Each structure stands twice: as structure tokens, then as C-alpha cells.
Image 1 (cartoon, one colour):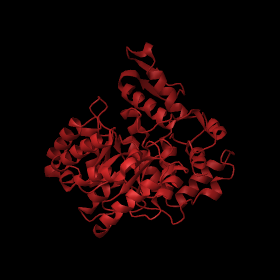
Image 2 (spheres, rainbow, N blue to C red):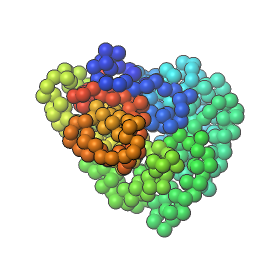
Image 3 (cartoon, helix red, strand yellow):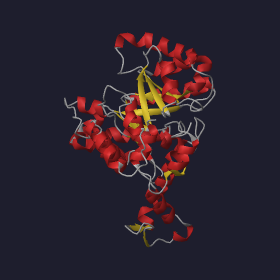
Length: 388
């Protein structure tokens, strides 16, 4: 798999100064966590799940979570597990992330992890790992131990993605202790933890809140405070941190490919950019676009998605601009090792070598995963191409 790999080679050449790299479940962990991008969730009860996975791969989805937890009724768990086993058997064989997206299963209990590995048989080769709900130190360690056991059964690496969504993390009086416990647990199993996911819907639920389409998660102060504290403790750039992914956006239009007719028409022609951006805003996507930008500004990378129409905007806004790439490579030149202040290549900002080094390193890692846009190619052109 690779980001924008569903596009024709000639179009990728028009869009990218440096194309995204290929990856699969065997890719080094740090790069793989960056490559997750928009992770599309789907209930494991879907009767045509295998066909859905193949279809979404053809539309640029590179990671999916098949959910056995909150997205399905408690009474449907056994049927969902049976369906999951059948659907994996119907998928083309291979390694997770090869021709199909990286596939994860969101479980309810630790026991489901080893049980599913046994039941999937050879289909387990298509599984990249498991998503662990309502993660705290006490509840999470048994899940992580189960993933370790599942690795032994499968004979290969499996990843865990804990979801940080518990009331203990939200409540101020228990937050510091809960974060410290989560940190201990995920640090102990660092080689197995691919990314940490934020369960903002559960945070809002604890106070009976729900943000409107005009509001981002950062407009809800209770939620914004938790995000800041999670990144503060678990997302540091000093080598101790983890990839923390952005929260879900709940709103979508009924037509999945709502922009396709308009975006197919000459996205590179002058004057189309503002018209297309206005079209996005008109279709209630302004909040999503702002939240994606705020995610990255606040140290998050990638995003949980519950609708296919959210995937292309997340990926388009994750591509490194030519200007960002120029700044990052300039900052990281070997002769800059002693520090100093530079005028940017675009002559519009100050680049201070030592303070901006961590940003530059993260930017070049994102460039590997999502590519670098050609000079003059922006979000609208990338989005137009992504929803072909």
C-alpha cells in the first residue's frame, strides 16, 4: 500500500515533488504509525465486509478498524465474530497492508484476541493488530498481554492501538494518575503499541455533550484540555512519545462521493481552488477541515473516520507542502548542526535550527508517508485527485 497509490502514475507525477513511500505491516514501526492516515471504522456485522474492504482500498483507504465493540449491539457480538471469520476467509490472501489496507479488529475483551487468531487461521495473515477499548493501566495490561499471546500463535508481529476514552482520564481529579498509569503500560509494551487513539465521543458522553458541525473538538474546552494533557505526557518528541491520532468527526452527507462531479472537472485550472473550497464549506466540511488542521497543530497525526467521505480530506491535508519540505530539509542540513537562525527558502519566516529541529524531523517522516506536493499544488488539487 501507499498513500495516493490508487491514482494513475501520471497524475501522481503531476501532484508530487516526492511521492509517498510503499508500506505494509512489516514496515518499521515509527514510519508505519505515521502512515495510518485516516483510519476508517466499520462494524464487523456488515454482511459484505470483504467486498467493502476491497472497494475502500481502491479509493485510497490504507487502514481500517473492524469493530466488535461500541458500534454493534451487545446481542450481536457472537454473530459479528462469526461474520468476521467468514469475511476474512473471503478476502484475497496476502500480508496486511500489501494489497489491502492495514486491518485491525476492535475487541471488547482480552479473550477475544487469542480466540479470533485461532478462528481466523490463515486469514490472520491479513490482520495488522487489535484496537483496545477504554484503555487504562489496570484494564489495558491484560489486553496487551493477550496481544503478546496472539503474536506467539500467529508467528509474527501484531500491533495494539489503545483507545484513550475512559472517564478516569477525563475527570480532573484522576487524570494525572491515569495518564501516569497509561504511560507505564504502553512504555512497557512499546514495541507492540503502534499508536494511541483518542475516544472524544466517550469524553463528551460523560458530560452529556455533543459538538455541532460548526465546532471542532478544540472548541469543547473539557475535550481540548484532555487532548493537551495526553499529548503532553504521551506525545513528546524526545523519543519517549507515541503517535497520537485525531478524534472522530461525526458528521457526513448521505452521498458518499458528494464532491466527485464538481472535482472531476479540471481541478488544476486557475480559479477553481476558491470555488472548490467554498463548495467544501457549503457541504458542512468546514468543521472537519479546521479540525484536521488543529489536530496537527496540537501534535496529533492521522484521524479516526466513520465515513469514507472523510478519508480524502485527511490525506490531502497530511501531504507535506513544498514550502514545509524546503524548510525542514534546510534546517536539517549537516552544516546546520551548530544551530543558528536562517531565513526560510520562501523568504517569509524565520527558521531557528535548534528549536525547529524536532518539527523538521517529524515533517520529513510525514513526507515519507504522505509525500511532498509540487510547488504550487495545494490541498484542493490533492483532494480533487483523491476523490476520483
